[in-house]
Image (tube, rainbow, N blue to C red; front, side, top):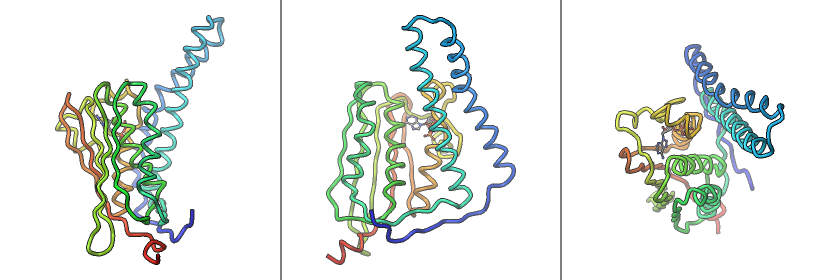
Length: 251
Ligand code: ADP
């Protein structure tokens, strides 16, 4: 992939209060998976049956994956917050990126017997940061699958050419999951905020995914919003503009 240019967005360093808050939330989020790892390792050390061993191994793997996800999210979030996250500007095939990202959540949706519908129009090669765009879509789709037990999830992408030659991208992720109470819809985009901590600890998660999506979209000049009804489902909409890749224009 050819790197055309790179933009570093720098902001103020996180304040001490914010760092303290981040540290406290982090300790809290680490505790559950770490407790599980310590407890299960002890059980496995004793002479447990092969079935019990493989059960323990499964939960051990899940707990380790949770810690890895948390660490990646914290690293990303602190880099963004310190203004040290650089966005790439490189040619990207939006249709391919959307399809490939949806494929990453397809096995989990299938396992849960939840339908997955994806639509993305064919557009010329655009310019943006494919890695971060994938991260945003994956987070929204991942949450949709995580919080949906039956019905469907969908990713609908609209790309409209604008008079300035760029494309206005509207990505909508809809699900028929547990939904989000109205009074929590405004705070879930803040770091370490979960609509319902009891429900979220059952599903797992860092509470950083949406904060990262929001910050990344803002760095791209875009925005994110949600409409949701508890018990009926949620719809997240990400808006951004992407210019047509220079090589496409030249052609
Ligand atoms: P997490 O890793 O906890 O999922 P996020 O920042 O991605 O963190 O989401 C924050 C919270 O927003 C979640 O814990 C959940 O309460 C709520 N949420 C996000 N997406 C959905 C969804 N599709 N359906 C229901 N609740 C959601």
